[in-house]
Image (cartoon, rainbow over all chains, first blue to last red; front, side):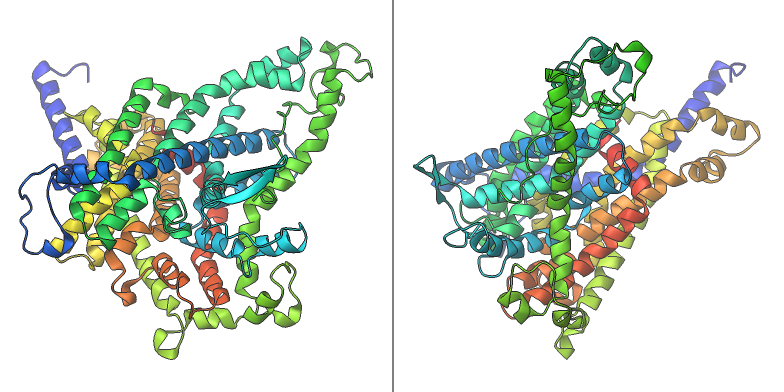
Amino acid sequence: MSASTGVRRGGLRRAEARAGLLLISPTFLVVLALVVLPVLWTVALAFQELRLIQLSTAGLFGEYTLENFEEVFTSSGFWGSLATTLVYATLGTGSAIGLGLVAALALRQGFRGRALVRASMLLPYVAPVVAATFVWGVMLNPQFGVVNAVGTGLLGWEEPVAFLSQRTSEVSLLGLEVGVPTALLTVVVFEMWRSFPFAFLFLTARLQAVPGTLEEAGRVDGATPTQRFRHILLPQLLPTIAVLALLRFIWTFNNFDDIYLLTGGAAGTDVVSVRVFDYLVARGDVGAASAQALVLAAVLAVLVVIYLRSGAKEEVA
Amino acid sequence: MADLAPARPAPPAPSGGPPAVSSGSPGRRGPRPRRWTRDAVENRAIAVLRPLVIAALLAFTLFPFYYMALLSVRDLSALVAAPARLLPALSELTVATYADVLAPTAEGGQGFLRLIANSGVIALGTVALTLLFAIPGAYAVSRLRFPGRRHVDALFLAVYLFPSILLAVPLFVFFTRAGLRGALGALLLVYVSQTVAVSIYVLRNYFATIPASVEEAAAIDGASRWVTLRRITLPLAAPAIVSNALFVFMIAWNEFLFALLFLVEDRPRWTVSLGLSQLAGSIEVPTTVLMAGSVILTLPIVVLFFASERLLTGGLTAGAEKG
């Protein structure tokens, strides 16, 4: 290559650029047509009065109005739904990462069959969401679910708990009756079960990359296991945990499948994504559905920018 | 739910085992006095807690799968009579549930055989199309300099992070308008648009580990870029391509939202996921029959996962790693 003249090198460059564009263009076109343009179109739809039944007669671009946002922002349900979504995403992310960390640390030391145990722990993450939510729904069923059967039979519960259809239940805590958001906590526990393997996988990989000499040095200096975790391991893991928290939060915040399949958005689990679906399919109110989707997108955009700016993506190794 | 949650967070594990056992280099460590120091207490506690935590985690993780398999072979009346029995009597076991769920609807079954075929066609089609698009794309992004390469990179990352619910509205409206909502081809393309970005990331990262000098050597021997790609680069990248194919298959096989939006009105076109979710609400189909359907939906994924776990775990991390 070094012997080639400037002209020839320019020709090669151009040939390379042509080949590159040719190879990337099919993917680019699919993504453009089915992701980018639809997202932009959502913006246009959010500013139109469009109902599903008028669809065959309406043009793609109609009259623009702010009514959808007015309707969405002034409806009492929306802000409560946004709050529910935040609580769900925060608790779901935190518990999944916490459990993933526990699993990664507990399985750090080798033993016979560890590879099999590790693989088994990834199952909730790869299993079909419809099957997982169905089996959880049956497990928690008040009539014949195993959890309630064990709870009333062995643990002395006074009556079965309708985990997925009860908004709150009174739990006596130190003599005080406290209202607990039953269904919301149940979907959070499901989210923890389903996505802790993701955190487990990343934290295990990161733990393997921690130099053994660091901990050995700590041990020689007399640091106890908890001290070594607090002062040696945890600082090494924090960047990974930060990235995981951001990624999991993004996905949990927008999660539709799990809640729709578990509760249908009832009993205080009415997250924004399920509302978007209901407005679109049940009410056929395309404009209001788009407006709420845009709110989700705005939150997401902020998070993605944080993610890209942080430079933290290089930390996940 | 407390009974399902794992016991309690475990203190961290020392990497080299309890210090009392000489796992490290004993020469560097002084004799350890056998007293109840904080170190000794913590190590004892960890030694006791670790197996407990692992057992609790395994139970929490795997119990729903065991329960699924169990209920799929239990007789319904036996289940209602003794819902807490986790080791069923041999007499109440049955495979009639599987016969019922698989049989065609015309014969009074739930027609899952047909749904399996639908899911299989859609998942395999998605794999084939995604690879067809992603392999050249990933090669271009990792090897060739072209205008806009960096922007394409950022775009694909954004697409990967974009959740499908945000696309639900415009795609639903558009395909309804175009009269293509029930078309399998339309659904296939939507699936490809969801998987192609992450595929490019995974494959690009793998291409980057193949030394460019190997390809340059082929070029010097007179091979064209296409011959090099087909004869040199693709065979070397085979492990990544296979793991990516499995990953895409799982996404397409498991997918729910778009199947619901596009196919729900047309029962003969349902996927297994969609069929199970639609029948789950009905009171006419017994729970145990639907559990058999759940096993049918889950089993291919579990088998594929364990058969290729080593390949796939790399793929899962690589997939979310995004270079």
